[in-house]
Image (tube, rainbow, N blue to C red; front, side, top):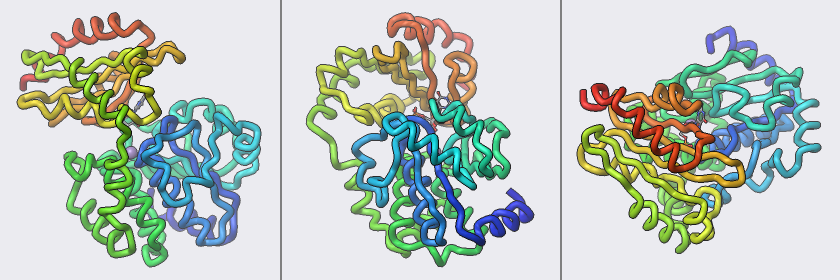
Length: 338
Ligand code: 5GP
Ligand code: MN
């Protein structure tokens, strides 16, 4: 996004517009924080802005300011499609390819609205009229702060915007521990706190609202943890039966994959979660250092993401997927041990 782009976007936003803001499917903290943060900002600037999410998001995000106004495409399709069709501007946040918006893909592709992408994932597609893509950024929330700053308007960031953006930075940086966290991230965060984000309250709302069942499920996941020291790899499996027994709710498995990475000398951690209804195994991959799980997922499991955090899926059964995974590892042995 260059100066000319910013000039044009400023001109666009100078008069009230109908604006739709879209996060990726299975929205996470960064996706919801960035879309809602931007939404508050645009509403304050007299636009008719709203967030349409492809599908529902976890309970631990159901406190973010403005989240009760979010339209869920999956359960309100007609209304969502009409809003997309009639939008002047569509922001797509925290994803790099339209298929990541799930069933919203076609509506978004067909829409005549001006599209603005703000995202930090690798290898972005070029569907947008304006593209703010930066893979070095900790989070899309940090980029929204940067975007508002490029518009010369950080003074307009009030407590609700600050809270949304802080929440997404907190979750996408793994509470500021991932290597994507920079000094600028901390400067942005400091300003968000100064502008009214209550860091302690936000942390509690996201991380200290576990259900008993979720902790039981974590126990099962940790029991299922396998370590492959020769590949510096650890993986976890969860069957649909295990999920059902723990009364699984969306978001319950968030963060489980990181436990593998907490083992000494392990730099590659994966969780395989069975989704019987969709007929797929959802895969989450994490790494430390230079080992790219984005590449690994792209090459083997049709997914992608970032160097140290990616997702993917498999339509083999759970056992076959794990078998495939183990059979692939020798090809990466050298990289994993270098
Ligand atoms: P998670 O494992 O938490 O679902 O996702 C980790 C990261 O990878 C997130 O940034 C997410 O947006 C991205 N990601 C997850 N699943 C997919 C996928 O199927 N394809 C691509 N390209 N990215 C994904
Ligand atoms: Mn993100």
